[in-house]
Image 1 (cartoon, rainbow, N blue to C red):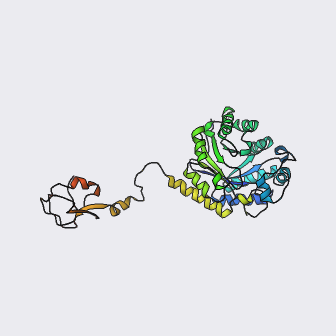
Image 2 (cartoon, rainbow, N blue to C red; image 1 turned 45 degrees about the vertical axis):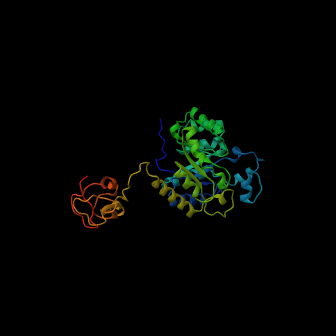
Image 3 (spheres, rainbow, N blue to C red; image 1 turned 180 degrees about the vertical axis):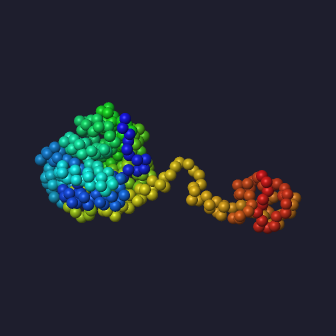
Length: 342
């Protein structure tokens, strides 16, 4: 059985997608940006336009809005293809730069190409959620697999998950991403709590493929238990193309990765104990029991002759009720710490 290679820490996928605009040089620069940001993987999209869409398929509304050009999906996507040679170059370049190469396959020939290339982690896009033969082909590889669930309801997502598992994918190799396919996603449509529903209902690890603007949503997702974060990025939001406007620029990607790592550390454990960094503050911040007035031997301790102050001497304040009403066995000057055996 192959073990899931996703690390215990949050796995961050810098989604280059088609933001290379069909240029290998731009794709290489996107890899460099992902490396500089500290992402775990950089992901592209692999497709043969003829295998993916018909020549008359219309663009999504956001694609027309973002490109400013109304044309067929076929015409748009044909300009955004990477060649097989491009894939080999990028795979080797990522290895040289110390970042994992990933790409989403959108058709069966592309699945075969990426498998032959040696890609070891698969990303199933939201549009293929119900593509049964496609799901089975990836499941038979039984490698770490990440499933996006945009546009899907719980029944459809359950069908997809069950198809993968029944076709040979081990549950431990599956991570399901909550997603919304609007580019950009309005904040009121993000619905982050649905990510936790996926975890509870499906019994799988979860994460987020985020298309909202900014970096706040991925950070919140990590606090809610996301194990994978996927986020689009670009060299420049003003570049022509369908996804640039809803993508992070290089400095934003770096800020997101840094923030995720900080939140990841801050989540800590469920134990409530003084932390290593604060233990030294206990002695100086907490109050102790000291004499409010002169207390003679034989006097009874009371609220009239005792008080609480920060002090280097005296019983801890939690012993207050134990001390009230007891007889003093010594004389204490005002301001002296009350030191008696308990």
